[in-house]
Image (cartoon, rainbow, N blue to C red; front, side, top):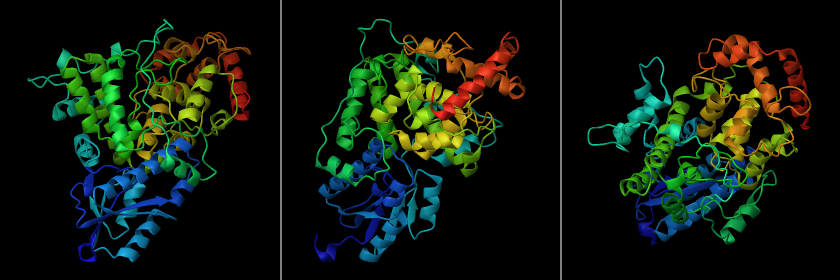
Amino acid sequence: MSEDRSPVQTVWVLGDQLNRDIGALRDADPETHRVLLVESTAKLASKRWHRQRAHLVIASMRRFADELRSAGFEVDHRRSDSLRDGFREHVDEFGPERVLTTEPASIDGLALLESLDVEIVRSNQFLCHYDEFAEWASGRKSFKMDDFYRWQRRRLGYLIDADGEPVGGRWSFDDENREPPPRDESFTWPEPQTSALDDIDRAVLDDLPDSCWGAEPDGTWATSRRRALSRLRHFVDEVLPGFGPHEDAMTTRSWHLAHSVLSPYMNIGLLLPGEVCDAVQEAYDRGDVPINSAEGFIRQVIGWREYVWGVYWLWGTEYRSRNELGADRPLPPVFTGADTEMRCVRACLDGVHDRAYNHHIQRLMVLGNLSLLHGVDPWALTDWMWSGFVDGAEWVMLPNVIGMSQWADGGMMATKPYAAGGNYIDTMSDYCGDCRFDRKQRVGDDACPFTTLYWDFLARHHDRLVKNPRVARQVRASERLSNLDAVRERAVEVRSRLDAGGL
């Protein structure tokens, strides 16, 4: 590009905004706009990131920079001590007349941008901006995800008939999506697509700090928009028809089942939620996908995902410190490498190590459930999941962990604690069959730790939970246990062994 046509404005693209159609970049022109991307060494050092999580973001940034260069943009892609330093270095070097950037996905990120001389452009990375969510929530004494989901369906038009009513006559087909894993062991799910690693991947891995942990990438996670779009097509064509029935199942035979595994791409911008839901709607309209699969998936995206995004911004930074149950135990060593005889926990943690991924029921009803029953500090679990999952981000993890999983907000997010004993895990998985612990036993060396801790949890929080109509029946049942004292004594031993990494 000749000197007299050098760009005079900068668009600063953050590492989770990697799409030409997002915010400030949408109207940028190579003739007038230079693009800035900053890899922050401080960000890499801020947590003990899973290797695949860090690789996904950095490799995707580098490929996006190349994509922009191919489109004619001049790109300043630099590694700096911090985002602030990278911005200042860029301004000192290029002296742009204006620096534009899209609203970030975090409260702290917004505070940083507001402290700098940048013009912040409204984000369109979600289908419901957090201002629109706040307006929807305003004046309501209470609100639930289901109310928001119905509002979203009507205003966006997904799976809505000509009269403005839900197709199929129901808003949710969730009751058809709770089947346990098929008993027929010959049953298989389509394998996710993979991509061969290349020089960019290897360079990124060489640049990662020694503090990163977990298995190296194996090509499961796409790091370009082209490959993310291919993953989307594969999901819609091959996987989505079978998504619904076993959405909540867990099995050692498959780490992915019929889950989309598209969340990492939506979270960093390689895919946009609208194009994902449009593809599902079109497949349903063609008759390729049953209503329970189409509705169940769209509910995850425009319902739960966007609800989590909205409440993150609505409830703000004080939500980080919520701890209504007074949970204060450290994260058990099994989460950071210690071995365990609990087969369900081992299966889920192996998945995190190998792929930086568990699906939502593994996160909620195994790892989250164990932490809730044990009494883990909610922020310790939040921070671990944030840094350990390939789709981790603060806006994702705060409401999901603090609220949904750990009930640390006392019911702002979920109407009841998602606590369960071994029976639930046995019903929804094949984990328990070969486990050395007996999910039917509450006491004794062979008693399932989940079963023991579940009844102890109800007793420990009796006075609070007995007032909750969704769990009062179980609390009353705990009062009638003939061996409740022995259960609580056993629970002390279980928690002690969990803390020591010896269970």
